[in-house]
Image 1 (cartoon, rainbow, N blue to C red):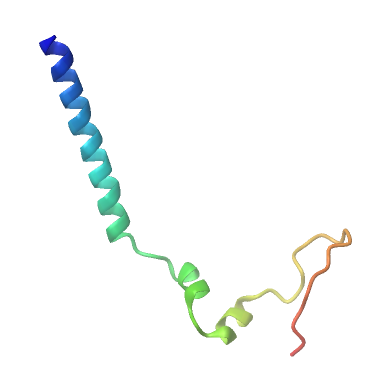
Image 2 (image 1 turned 135 degrees about the horizontal axis):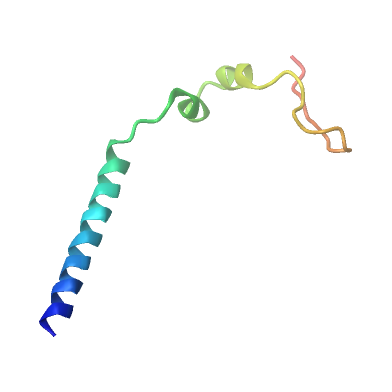
Length: 68
C-alpha cells in the first residue's frame, strides 16, 4: 500500500509541476507582431495588410472588396 501511495504522490507532484510550467509559459509568452496587428485599433493598418485579390478559388464564392 505504501508503494501505491508514493507513486500517486509522485504523479500528483509531476502533474502540478507540468501545470505550473504551462501556466508560467502562458504568462510570459510574447505575441508576434503579426498577431498584434489583428488586435490593433487602426483600420488602415488592417486594410493595408489585406491582399489585393480574393484568395478564394473561383467556384461561385462571393469575394467582397472595399472600393477605395
